[in-house]
Length: 230
Image (cartoon, rainbow, N blue to C red; front, side, top):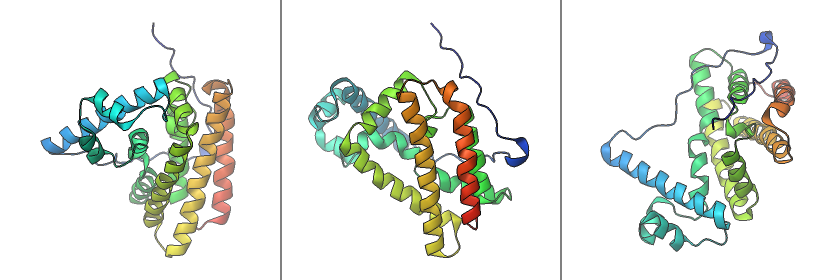
């Protein structure tokens, strides 16, 4: 049985939306040894998430995860220093995404906020899970695990802090101004995603939320442009 393709997401007015610039992906390990390590890391994370979804995060020990992945506990900890990191590994590629968007935009002559706005609209159009506008069952299950586990929510703050730091460096200029701006931008992206996630968790489909998600993104970025020099 095949699933239906995502419903089209309504577009913002063409005149106000810059064309998304190509954004380089997070660095991919190039050597054979590094690629093997990355495959192991992904396999460990997948095994852990499957167990956590089945039994609950707190009900599964690190020893159980190691046994399911057929590795020793010391090996597991070499890849993931904390149990929470096994779940948040799926965020790893997104940690410096905003910074990469800004850097790519600058190369294309696009202002940082315009590049980030265009990237967000593109993500909404693709129903990228990171935007919250995704109702695939596997994504919904992952969100329930993530946001329903206090230890994971707490660990997520560290991820957001690193994301802010990378974005501030990419924005440049006065270090304090850049940190303040990065904090506001990351907060806006978080709140927008959480709103989409909450509505879909409440029973709406991604298609039903899409128009409001695009409109909210437009309002949020207008507010950012009015207050930030980027």
